Image (cartoon, rainbow, N blue to C red; front, side, top):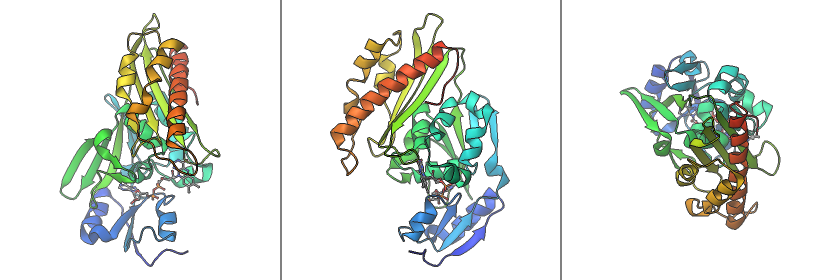
Length: 297
Ligand SMILES: Cc1cc2nc3c(=O)[nH]c(=O)nc-3n(C[C@H](O)[C@H](O)[C@H](O)COP(=O)(O)OP(=O)(O)OC[C@H]3O[C@@H](n4cnc5c(N)ncnc54)[C@H](O)[C@@H]3O)c2cc1C
């Protein structure tokens, strides 16, 4: 099918995008890479009367360190962020997650902000953002607000972004330390498909190999990505030995609420979550012990 008729406006600044959103109201939608919105329009699942293009807004393409955060502008292309060595050193999980997203072609167009606002429960970047506790800077004509990842992701394909707001940037916490490791893994039908279940973890160990900090997240097994804080906390003070990891992830099902579909039953998704959680924790431990911050998987 073809999209319903719409009008098009290109914004040159965030202020202009916000003013157009305020003017056209719920009939308008921002368009970034178009990799989710255009197919939805073609299937008539979305019928915006106005498309407001944010692709040429320079202030949405900033990539920088700011205090304890790595900041990515919402309109940065996923491929550019994946290739950015400085970003990968600061927050390796972003690159590790992007490895699994779609294809070279979709990443050349798709943006960081588009993926986060799209908020597919099985998408990789929302999972990384939820796991690390990223913060989202939302702008509208009347001002700006910052929301945490736990407030931002509300339901499948639904975020805290109001119809007159533009996601301007995402602030990813940078962990300081010598022995930090992270890992991302998922199972999908084919590489480039959305995950059936995805998992990511980041740990910090001390010179004796003891875990001083850990985060663990699961995607595709609830309405929004889940940061499994209780399990991550229970690993603090351990050597992250295999037995400790296996015991910790045993109860993971109680923090998830997966559905069943043609690809997998809810029970199988919980099983996958347990297996992938243990795998990323082991890989993150190995990366931390090696003094590196992360590898692809
Ligand atoms: C074949 C294929 C495979 C894919 N596989 C995966 C995959 O494995 N994993 C995955 O995560 N994704 C996958 N995707 C989706 C892809 O990552 C998209 O790029 C992403 O979901 C949307 O980003 P976009 O920039 O294209 O946004 P658009 O499609 O332009 O917009 C998506 C939504 O975000 C809103 N939006 C965009 N920018 C802003 C902003 N700055 N402020 C407020 N709202 C905004 C739009 O209004 C729209 O509602 C795939 C897509 C395709 C076509």
